Length: 345
Image (cartoon, rainbow, N blue to C red):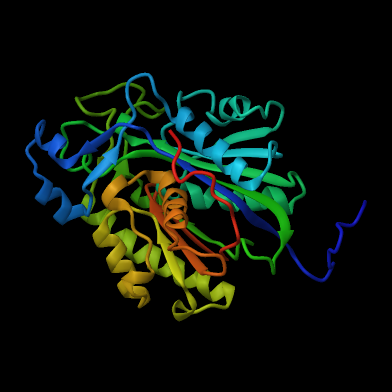
């Protein structure tokens, strides 16, 4: 076995972020658009969620379309035209069977590589990053294209003011390569967790093996217990973030930027308060994009890169929470990455 040039055997290998990209649909749906079809208002939605608009796919578009564009931009950012594996984190695959990742890989010209989906709902990107890091650590792949892509507009009731205003559609992607733990971009220690006892707090009842068909109207749409989800999200994201920081040898005061899952502005502010991190260090774009589920973290990072609010050398804390219940966090020092475009499509 050959030794990598310059590799120090005493230094641990790591998965290193070397490219990033994001894509959102062209169609924008404002709060006023929603108010024309349901009992709500722009003021009501903004006060409860912090959201002013969201991007929504049109008929004929699918999750894979956004995933392909985000993946293409991430690979362009990394200066690569091939990777060893493709992982797609999604709760809204194009079809129940097969998984979406192989088609995404094929459309990117990556036929023959390992490709599979991960479903951890809004924590999916963090679970996917940990999976990609594991593939690299195990020597299965020297590089991984990790995509978070969701189109929750396809699984929320368009007339339900408790869910329809919250979610938008989009995709974000990172390219990971094998590198060294001391490099900028190296993913730090992860904290991942779950609580299946509360799986019904955010769920689509019908469509799986437990309940194939809708037994009552709305069973094919997402049902969510908002107040309970809020409480769990704040508690779990805070505790997970602190564990990841401790494992990295950091404190909240060391963090230059926090990138939370863009669930709800009240959740984001509560987590920042519990971490004692000022809001000017917290990346927020939920006002323009809504909650894009597994795509929200990478989209927020690409958005911040385009605006210059995340810079090379920044110590970044990433934390998320989703249905399942699932949660996760990790850390990294942001690397020097070229960004060909802030958003595709």
